[in-house]
Amino acid sequence: MAPEQIRSVILDILSRIAPDEDLSDLDDSVPFREQMELDSMDFLDIVMELRKLYRVQIPEEDYGELVTMDSTVTYLTPLLKDAESTV
Amino acid sequence: MTYDSIIIGAGLSGLAAGIRLAYYGKRVCILERHTTIGGLNSFYRLRGRNHDVGLHAITNYSPPGGKRGPLNKILRQLRFSWEDFDLSPQFGSSVVFPGHTLRFNNEFAYFEAEIAAQFPSQIDGFRRLVAEIDSHNIGDLGQTWISARARMAEHISDPLLINMLLCPLMFYGSPSEHDMDFNQFVIMFRSIYQEGFARPYKGVRLILKNLVKKFKSLGGELKLRAGVQQLVTDGKHVSGVVLDDGQVLEAKNVLSSAGSAETLQLCGADVPVDDRFTPGEISFVETISVLDQQPAEFGHDETIVFYNDSEDFYYEQSKNPVDVRSGIICSPNNFQYDQPLEEGSIRITALANPGYWMNLPEDEYIEAKKYWYDQILESSLRFIPDFRPHVIDVDTFTPRTIKKFTGHINGCVYGAPRKILDGTTPFDNLFLCGTDQGFLGIIGSMLSGISIANLHLLNAK
Ligand SMILES: Cc1cc2nc3c(=O)[nH]c(=O)nc-3n(C[C@H](O)[C@H](O)[C@H](O)COP(=O)(O)OP(=O)(O)OC[C@H]3O[C@@H](n4cnc5c(N)ncnc54)[C@H](O)[C@@H]3O)c2cc1C
Image (cartoon, rainbow over all chains, first blue to last red; front, side):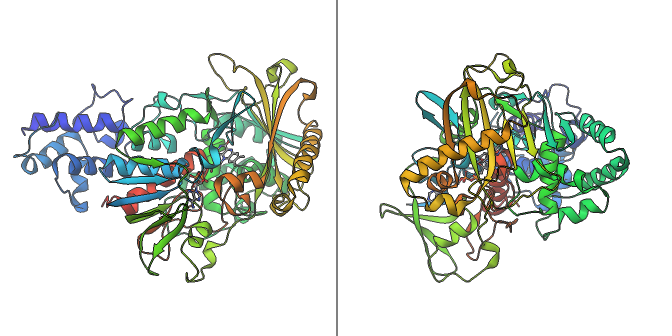
């Protein structure tokens, strides 16, 4: 998947976790935590969704990489380079 | 075939846990002894009317678009949108003790102003207490019992205010007599005073039906009339369950919402003694009066009134069949719905003596329910206009009813005084969720099911 597709995948996961959230004005450089008030339970959910969808394992010490959309996409790009997008 | 997980109980905690597991592809089966779902917060039909078993109000209100707090956490974790729970906020509630009425609604500042006006010498202390509540971490699974009364007394010197603050919190969530655990106090304080009350127009059935629909659409299995009679164990590990009809089902792990002592009883006689698994003793009698008018028409527009007729507040197992000194008056009509409910009703709840109700012969039981219905109403009339001329139908239930339909020992509503916060048991793949794990109430029990499923059954980390 290309970075742009990875971004859509993350948006899709976020919209499942928070269906009432308007994600169209998400700022890719601002932490999710601040924009959507995601907490640790939600971050675990993002990790679990990625595991379910793409079998990608994200070790706990890397959770910090999932702070913003930009950092998440950067982190996932090498991990998902051979994966097919599901969205 | 072996399930990944078997869940005992299709109450709110079991259903919520089931959704999490099914969502992440686990083979999961929920087993429920009763003929319907919901457990302590179920619903039923009687003489052509729909009733809720327990629902007074959903706590932890958050308006649409809100992002914080337990309600939003549950919606996210279960992939629901705000509309799925259809919550209408309360009109306003109160705590009434002799000489003082403290009103509250879903704006905490209003409650704070009430306290400042009525207990001016205590307001600074109250604010310090709130600061302590705000900084408390309820997620610390290792914490032990701390007296809420002692913590409150560090900031508040007027025992009347302490009792008034505790009254709604104990009535809606204390498994222990006279005092509560500070952690439980914080959970309840936030859920009632800081977040507040709401109700779905259609009652709890809306939430339960949405939970089941989601669970099934994700491939989860739900078996009703499927009581678990026994857990199959080798003393350390559980391999499955035996149902009341003798059928055996196997599972890699079991999550039980039946209660801590109740669950250990299913494990047979050779379970090590553990005093954390001692059942609770607090239960209630609840009267439901259906009316020929809306309560507002005879001048009662409060949502919930918590009353107590002396400065001392006795939250304890009642020595009489019912303790009529204190109680809760709930009007399901008094929420901000788009249209009024079809019929008026008033629910009154009071502390009860489980032993008395369990042991009555059937014919005396019916008579006793009638007698105590009258006593409870009589007592409540000090706090609400006399609505008796408007009553067109009545139902009363007791600790015996609760035991019969949910299996909870003593008909306990808030479970054991000692909570098992991490949900573990003496068996390495048997876990607890629901009331005895520590989060309770409608929102709390769902959160409990979610948390324990995440922690132990989903290998989240
Ligand atoms: C009268 C009353 C009023 C209440 N009012 C409110 C309110 O207004 N607001 C609020 O938030 N909360 C309220 N509550 C509390 C709330 O209902 C409970 O905290 C919550 O429903 C607990 O859910 P649970 O899943 O932990 O347990 P339960 O609902 O007890 O679920 C356990 C389930 O397990 C089943 N079970 C037990 N043993 C077995 C077995 N061996 N095999 C198979 N199944 C078994 C039971 O039948 C039950 O369905 C009220 C409770 C009562 C009784």
